[in-house]
Image (tube, rainbow over all chains, first blue to last red; front, side, top):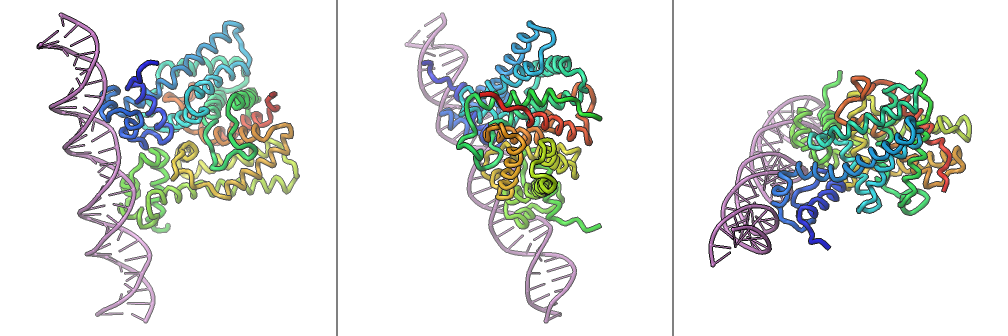
Length: 209
Length: 209
DNA sequence: GTCTCGGTCATACGATCGTTTGATTCAAAC
DNA sequence: GTTTGAATCAAACGATCGTATGACCGAGAC
């Protein structure tokens, strides 16, 4: 196989540690130690610790973005008015698929996304760009067609609900495990549960005012 | 009015800053400066920075716990089998009510909860106790009665979905504002939208296996 | 008056942080 | 063989971190 590229190893280590300990909770030294690289490697390859963060985030986000766009294009090529369930699948599905690559059952990426979403710090917020805005607007329009009675505000609330459920999915909310089984059910199940859950939620009639 | 108690002011400042910058992103000096107190006040009143965190978390969590338990008791006093919508209201409602006290539209508390939920660090996890376990188990049982076809695993997934939606509610996921209005709709609306959203989601038929 | 003590104060300690620097390595270019 | 430049290295910089210390204050007890 290819020789272990230092830059990539630093990126991998940073992704893992940022997810586990957060941005400020992770020292550059911890990253380079885990990566087996020198302390100065971060400055050399990424400019700064913040530069490393955006590189990590972009590497996680971009495949998800691409899959969301491709899924919507595929639906719109078939019909100008895709049903809600299909839209939920196209939007939420990639959020789960993007989590299975590499880390332990997606928990790591899930945690990273929760941190990104919940952190108001400047460094954490500058990753959003025109790509994310485009995706958001296109899905808003599509959902708006499928749910004609819904006000834009409530629709936007619901789309953020999708993100919330997908993001928090794999993080353990309580210390103890799920009451029934030993592990919070890895594999395909959560993805399908989420589609069921979110499709029903999105299809709910508008809240009467 | 009562004289500004130092301990309370430190608690208030810490709650605000922990929510805005996270636990590790907030220095003890920043807290005491905002509180107008001396640096050593944290060590004196709370033992350590971690002790201050648990005090902050407990102050936020406990009223929510009490309201969730009281709501469930009230429902069970009326009928042994409360409908799903009522259970959702009793469980999720306090998560929203607990957010309106004091901070700007709940965004601050919402962020704090997201941080608590998403952080796997030891200091962040030791707040869960028997009270939280009891609440979880009692609601699981009640939802289990109301949704007889659902597997325990999928039911547990859905309950975590409630927490996810309530927690992420007020945090801005993208930089830009909601597409329609200037502000992400403050006041009572999000709470009612969430009940609609989550009641429909919880009532969805089991995912076919 | 003096003692007591919960509370607050300025100050300092050692550790760790992100970043920078200048030397060193090493394979490809000439 | 020499030069070049990307990459890595050990070492150090000043800043900031959490915590501990001992002096100080002031109101009530005696």
